[in-house]
Amino acid sequence: KNEVEQSPQNLTAQEGEFITINCSYSVGISALHWLQQHPGGGIVSLFMLSSGKKKHGRLIATINIQEKHSSLHITASHPRDSAVYICAVMGNTDKLIFGTGTRLQVFP
Amino acid sequence: EPEVTQTPSHQVTQMGQEVILRCVPISNHLYFYWYRQILGQKVEFLVSFYNNEISEKSEIFDDQFSVERPDGSNFTLKIRSTKLEDSAMYFCASSEAIGTGELFFGEGSRLTVL
Image 1 (cartoon, one colour):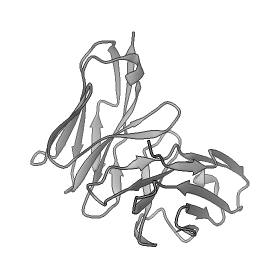
Image 2 (cartoon, one colour):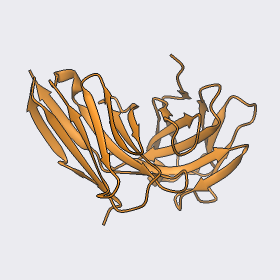
Image 3 (cartoon, each protein chain N blue to C red):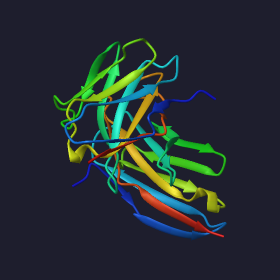
Image 4 (cartoon, rainbow over the protein chains, first blue to last red):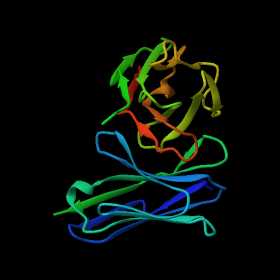
């Protein structure tokens, strides 16, 4: 079983839809990262969370430490949001454990 | 905006050859990382580096791999004798602080071993 599980693996949406990507993990963590990987392969950090909720523009990330679960929400989705979204957790060491990613396609 | 830069963006090499991938982290960052992503698979941690030494490494990071920060700015990953299965995208990242520091990734170096 993977230490970091994401769902769904693939997601298709119409422009304007509200999107939720989920991440569950099985290890103790010091922080959880949400990353965006562009079609060209580059990776951008979206959020780093250790508790609660963070918001940046149309993106919202939440984490529930007790339930070992995090969600990434995109409000008013846009075709430029199309990318792979990756959840990654850092435990008590600086080794980052990655999920397999959620491939999002937003159509106009 | 400060960024992590990686060179080369793509390298093709013959099996058994040595490869050096270079990274220039953000200047005030203290923690440096290499990750790899085999085509179609998830990103995997290779190694972390702090205070001029390896702080953590994965089981992938065997004796064929080494890292160094030779001049205080570049952070390099060397693969001594490449194998076909080393073909992957290699990402460098840096952060100001461990654990709770935001990670900044480079654009990646694609290595193809023939």
